[in-house]
Length: 629
Image 1 (cartoon, helix red, strand yellow):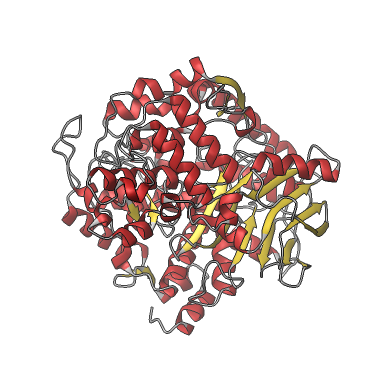
Image 2: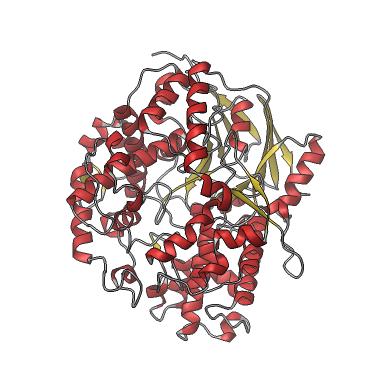
């Protein structure tokens, strides 16, 4: 077995033990990279290999993995992403999230493919990586400070304004379970509560500066492909450049699938006031980009008093606009921008924050929460001032915010009185801003997602109803968005395996790469000879490890469920009287388990399937936990 490092990789992984304040370097063999690629694949590998079953996610025994992928830092659009993972304190399941920006590319330029953080420091620290040197430094002076202030102070302290910083904010320090990790101040590993894991370890930040571009096996081939995709980007993603991801607000509303008032409705009467064009016309002051990408889909906004929204915190993406806007019945764009800034400054997931506040609003309107519970706040749908107040309270874990900092699933359990019917969550993670009643394959994905409800490793039916979008995955015919059939399950399985590959590689979902182009890009970077089938197996392997990890932690097929609300119909709009059929969904899930090679009661890969994926070692890990697969 060779130890040769393929192109596109650094060949080194940094292990940081915060309990001993020591670091170590590991140099994996080439087969490790080819099997797991990076990102989600690395997360699954290390969580299964190194975590004992049943550990508390906020204990020193948890491990936090920052991982690049083969395509991170490769000079092509969409390659600015990297991943983070741990056992989730929000769900108790596999935790995985990706972020864009520049931090991951900088880590690769410093010579590292991943960082494994273990243990817990006695006092606040931060990790300083300058090329191949790593140093653990005191962070007492940074603890409790907002994210923009922390990045500024670290750069001043180390004397380099090109340093890239990933950090947990004050919310993560307070173990808010819906806290994320932020790099470049406004790029988020938002989901799964990973910021709380970072805070539990007393690790404030990881600062990185690198000076050496990643080596490519065939640089000319990579650059040629990069130029090809840059031309396509200009033709096809013009709306993203002009309006950002908020370009989708109006279209989703027209389709009747803009999440509104805690998923009670699919259309919002004030949609024009929170749309991408409205943001661009009124508050936008600049557009921002990620590493090597010319789309410039990131928004930069500025709002004066009394909101005081600063440029440093960027601006709201689609998810934030919908979660803090239509989902809460709020049509005040300035208030949404202010709440988005509060989340960015304190390090919180805007999706979970907005969905949890919308849950609390519905509880309030139905008498399950009172003004006494809220500290006098009128937490009604549409109250922008109340929404902004509660975001602040969650970040500080004060008043009603202390309850909501637990996420809507735990909050519903504490409230009781049937509050769970208003908690739009799966496996404990709040639903993102995509409505499965108009995209039923997405609903399959929500139920099956190993992280709980997630849109980043899922299928969006409206994108995959055309045969041209599927033929690279071996699917010859598209399936309508509202069809829930074995054919839809087949399409879903192909798409989701590819999505998990992209999250291992790692490549932005918005870039219109064809599968064959991705193959050529990886061949040019690594020097390997590969094909679409191998890459799909990488994704299937990552997903199999995630599902196996969850099975070991006590999750079964019974946890693959949608909130009951998603089986009810809208009272008006284009999807009136077109519900998801619960029986059909149950049948679709059973069909998926059979297609994927999963044990139907456990909802995890069988031993035979794991061996087929070259994951025989996972069988041993699962059997050690007393499970029969």
